[in-house]
Image 1 (cartoon, protein in one colour):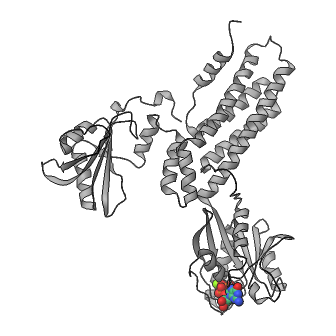
Image 2: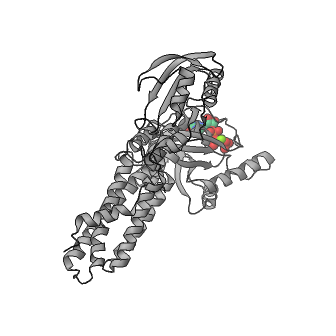
Image 3: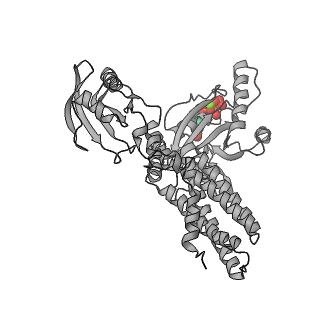
Length: 456
Ligand SMILES: Nc1nc2c(ncn2[C@@H]2O[C@H](COP(=O)(O)OP(=O)(O)OP(=O)(O)O)[C@@H](O)[C@H]2O)c(=O)[nH]1
Ligand SMILES: [Mg+2]
């Protein structure tokens, strides 16, 4: 966690970095971005001078030998009003790999070096343009695999997640200030009023933390999703269901029992939540060597699943063989029972059974009941779609929030033992501060002085 001292205030101590900012390959336009103190010199040698700030100008791009190799748009962002906070030059050329290499090469010849991965954003963080959570959101936005994930990343980038975390930190800072005051003045009686105040404030910050944690858990689902494995006897329609959920003919379907051999993996999205669905070989004893290997694989997949979709044939239900199969599932594995081929069962209706929360009747053939199955998958994943905009949290954030929560729980136990209480608050606060990467002890001192008259 960089402290204020680690943060160079100006870019002048750094070198100048350059990189092709657009994806490899051919495109209408390709962009080379340059950041650092050497931008003016580089603009001089490639463009013949710095363009006016924030004005798009068209220029010939000239290499070190004086040859024009492209003609494009140049944009100059003076420090600190740029992405990195340093002087930044963006050169937009024609987006072919050779042109881009020549453009990058011209920047390197003029004194830049190739940027490390993420180095522009790292500099933005060091220059205080973004905090850590925001910097991470940049990557999450670029990597977003669904609209929902992208929207959520954009909220984090705009600082909503950081603001929520900072609000928690501010509440803790206040509470610590009050507590430190008690510690510093032992002669003052810690009256009932103070105790009640501390108790109420602690309850408040804990409730707020729960909210942030809940939204973060939701968001982390958008990032990492869940892993669902289909398991069942041969021919019950596992592959047909996978094809239905994927919306594509991915798995081979035949009336022959034992069609699927290899485990087949498909990435799907339901309401933006990424779900890996795995189709497996029908579970049965077999003398066919290939099928036997497939069945082994199926069991292996089952042990790795977040959720097992046990597919059963509606007309057959749970007989002795199905019982046997169910009893072999790992006891702790979350599971849904999917009764397929409801279209073949006279009088049976598709959908969820109100009396059995983890059972659903569907038809892979007609699509009946599939919507209920999708809802149940989301529920099992812990997604509550109707909730407020989730924070696209990473594992690191969840861990930090959970750590803060543990210290606040501990703090409840330590109420009245003020030194321990203060220490738990401090630990909770530093866990939270790791999320945004911004914490200095000065914050606390400032808070104490501003709230308390020491001379009294
Ligand atoms: N009527 C009806 N037939 C279905 C339904 N689902 C699957 N089938 C048929 O059942 C047969 C087996 O389907 P699959 O999807 O290959 O079954 P599977 O469970 O993957 O079978 P294995 O890979 O052998 O384990 C095929 O002939 C499908 O067309 C359904 O909902 N209704
Ligand atoms: Mg199959």
